[in-house]
Each structure stands twice: as C-alpha cells, then as structure tokens.
Length: 452
Image (tube, rainbow, N blue to C red; front, side, top):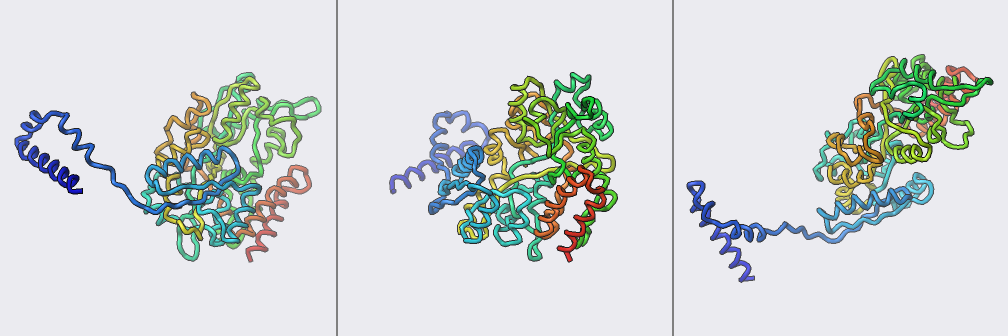
C-alpha cells in the first residue's frame, strides 16, 4: 500500500512540474515525449462500484426471439451494472392469464413484458409500479420517445399522473405493397401521403371478380375489427365515440358510423379480403392482393413470401382519410412489478429500452422500429430484412398517430364490452343482419349500462 501511495505521489509531482514548465503554452509539449504521457493515462482506473449481487426476474412472451431480445438488453445492462443478473422467465400459455395469476399470488417477475392495451388494467389494479422517478434516476430522455407510444402508459391513478410502462418499439401502421401486382395492372407504387380517393381508385383497378361476382383478386388485406384499424377509421371521419367526461359512449354517432362504413365497406364491396373467409393461404403472402395493412414486425414474413412466390414488395403510408389523417399505432414494452424487492435494478433494466444503447441492442435484429425519434434514420432497422425499401413510411406523419382512447379512458369492464361489441357489429353489418347504425346502437346500450 505504501509503495502504491508513493507511486501516485510521484506521478502527481511529475505532472505538476510539467504543468509549471508549460506556462508559455508550448515548452513542455515540445520537450515531453509522448511515450512518457501514456502511463499517466493508464494509471487512472475506471471507477468501480461495489454492489451486492442482484438477480431480477424478467417475464417475457414464450418465443426464442423474445428471449434473444431480452438477453441482448441484459448484456448491455451488465456493462454498466455488473452486479445485476437477469433471469428470463417465459409466460407459457396465455400471457395475460399467467401474469394476472402470478400477480395475485405475489409472484409476478420484477420486470414483465406488457402490451399497451393491458397497461391500464394492471396499473389500476396496483400490479405495476409508476416509472417517472425511475426514468429520471436512470437518465431517460422521454422527449425523445414518440408521444403516442408513451400515451398508452401515461395514466392518472389515485389523482397522480405517471407512466407505467416503457414502450420498446414503434408500431405505426403502414401498407405493404405487391409491386409486381401493381405493375401488372399498370400502376405505380403510390407516394407517401396519398389520399383516400386515390386509394379507392387503386382498389377498383386491382380488384378482379369472376362472372358470378366472386372476388378472385383483392385490392387490400386488413383486419377491419382490429382496434388500431377501426379506431383510425372512426377518427378519420371526425368521429368521437367517448364523451368528454368518460361517462358514456356513442358509437352510433353519424361521424363514427361514417368512419366505420368507410373501411368496412371495403369488405362488403369485395375490395378487401373477408376476415371470415376460408383461404388456402394468406392471400397477400400468396401474391394475390395489392396491399396489406401491417406493421414493421410483418416485414420478415412479407420478404420471405415474396421470395417464395416471386413478387417484389415495398411499403407506403396509410392513405389519408377525407376529414382527418388518422393512423393506428401501438406498442409493447416492459413494466415493473409493484411488489418487486429490486426496483432499482429492475428500473435500470427497463430504462435501457428508452435509451440509445438499449434500443440498439433490442433492434439488432431489425424486426422493429426504434421507439426513439433520434434513431429514425438508423440503418440497423431500415435495411432489415431487405435494403432499398421505403422505410420512411414507418416513421412518416407521427403527429397523425391516434390512440385507442377507450382503452385509456374507460373502466376495464367497458373496454371488454367494446372489444366484443365492435366485431359483433361488423358481422351483423356484413351479413346484412342489421343496419350499421342499429348494430352500433346496441354497442352503445351495453357499454353505457356499465358506465352508469
């Protein structure tokens, strides 16, 4: 120890002398060889933080890809927090059922994967912890995160507004394009920001029917009752289905009806694939549909199908609706168990998903779009699964993202009723069992009975 202290003293003395001899700004620099400066730099060790070892449990969806992603961020965490080890625990079976059961028994993992639509339910039940202070303590710049992605986790619980999850990817809905099919019909890939009238012109030119009126080639493939889609449809016509005081809904409002009709008539008129139809394989993947509504995680499958079926693909933004440009969006992410005994360690891990180094690790496969605006031009995700695609569409017009506000503003029972009632209304309308207005009025009645 004495020798070490003596060495440090000598080094400091030498440095002090060098500084004094350099008062004119150049003498010491010219006379001190570079070789004598290197040891001084090497003699300054990195600060070592001594912490007791901690293992945090991380609950994820049961898939090799999810395990790989979670572990990749864990490796980044290890560099700055070597005392923290993550233990991956896949949710086998239905995620929500398993997570709620674990929470009820007090055994929810310290960190849990969560989808945007479940955040409110888990937060209101006291299952997951607020994160604003945790984000701040870990240097997260929330202003760099797409606002719509934070929106699903920003909730008022017990009179206090806080965030309850860290979104990990930006799922901004786009349209995949079969360029080969468009070219066959004499059509170019539309430009980002195209309007609804142009979209309908494409639908009419791409859709083919046989003598019996059965569609043999479709213009578009989309899920009409998937909530990100139908919410964007209603907003695109200026629809407002939740009252300002959150105490009632009105899906039978004329603007809401017009928005749903705008989209659902694509199925009714044969331009879009029937979600209840029996097809030997996914029509778009089979090369028989012009457009497919989807998000970035669909890209690898589209790319594989294009190779198998021999067609070229690209991406374009969703078309602008007549009244308001509304684009569906969503995300999944991670929350911290309210009962975790290792919130600091769990917070360090979760916060990485909102920082550049963590996002780079998570997005190394390129399957997602970074949730950070500062990474929108990053090549890692833009060139995967194939370079040269219009990935600008994935991050274009973020100001047009619309939230599924019923999942944020209404009680869980009302949310569940809407998620059941809207598909039921669609089926009645498509099968001509009811007018769209009457089918949606039935949804109003059931939901409003719960909100009284």
